[in-house]
Amino acid sequence: MAKYSKKNPVVLMQGNEAIAKGALAAGLDFFAGYPITPSTEIAEILSEELPKKGNRFIQMEDEIASIAAIIGASLAGAKAMTATSGPGFSLMQEGIGFAKMTETPCVVVNVMRGGPSTGLPTKPSQGDIMQTRWGSHGDSPAIVLYPESVLESYQLTIRAFNLAEKYRTCVVLLTDEVLAHMRESVMLPDLKNVKLIHRIHPTIPPEWYKHYEENPKYISPMASYGEGYRFHVTGLAHDAYGFPTNRSDEAAVMMDRLKKKITHHLRELIQFETFMMEDARSAIFAAGITARAAKSAVVKARKSGKKVGLIRPLTIWPFPDDALRKYFHNVRTVFVPELNQGQLLNEVKRAMGSVWNYESRKTRNIVPIQKNNGELITPQEIISTMKEVK
Image 1 (spheres, one colour):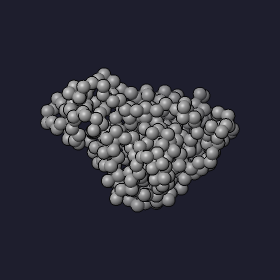
Image 2: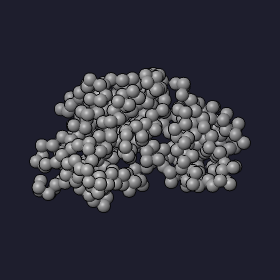
Image 3: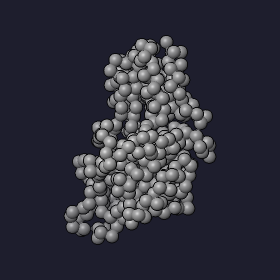
Image 4: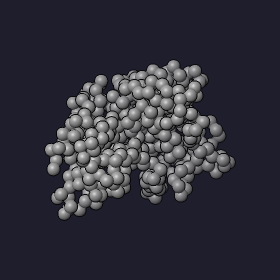
């Protein structure tokens, strides 16, 4: 950790505050949103801070309008974001699909709470993990990040903007009620040392410009409205200029680009942490606020002589399949604690299915530890489950 100084002092910061400040550090120009527990502090802070920089904050009439507004702002050249929770995130799904289809950069923060429907507004949940990947209809690959601390909330917010701008897509920052409202002492990095990515602007004459031009890296320049470049934006299948098409070859090219801009960059997109996995004979796979309890459980289990480790995904989607196969290959039991009824569990089973063959799976387990009642999973509950599994 860097030493204390006036330039980067240690401050007490809330998770939602860290997200708001991370967005400002990333260059946020425009925020549109609708108040909803437990994300409201993000909007409150940005409503004060954005106007100070000459930028825009708008409280919309609902979440559907919010996602539409940030897409429009992004098409006009702004770095744009909204923040919501479960019910609002559900309303945004068609808009998120539109942002992916039109390859328009934006960031959506989803502070998870208990559901479904209105659920438990002031309690934590991890019930939206699958929705962040599959909520929008059609094939629309997702980039979803999930921090475990206040500092990471700041850092991954900046990363979310960087990935959205680079890959021209909607990136979701996933967090939860406890992480959003907890306060920790953090030392924010010097912004001079923080890499910021901005969308690539075209340098060719307007008559040569294709808004969805193909290239080997599946990353293409993006003109903004008002810059003199002519292009069309539609949620329909479209050609390289953005105009609607029914041609199967053009639709196939478009869909392949949406997929390959993700699948061809997995090494850059996927981030994960390993904790005491070097000699682990059993392991935990946990994300977000639950990973904090899991780390504590690992430390306590190690003190009692058990060789336990942890893998924590910072990137939920794309899912870190290769990491699991590498680090869990020689592990006998994997424990999956989560605040839902088994969303990460099924992904771990899928990822390990091709590695743990039928014979070996007779002696290997993937064990769920689940809660969806608004309470956190404790380190002792994880340890107790470990003791029950032979």
